[in-house]
Amino acid sequence: MRKVAFVFKFPPSEIKELTLNELEIWRGAADEIMADIASFSGGDT
Image (cartoon, rainbow, N blue to C red; front, side):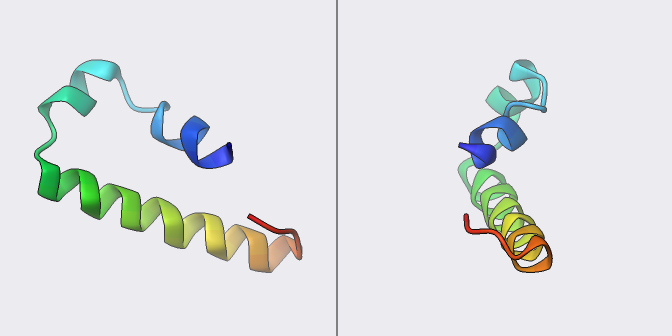
């Protein structure tokens, strides 16, 4: 559920303007960030 919160930090209007390709890039970046945080804190995603 943390990933959802991360995504919704962006204004809804900005999300709508993203292309599918950009959305995939953002989602990939979010996954990497969450993985880094999880490994750093020793928690699970």
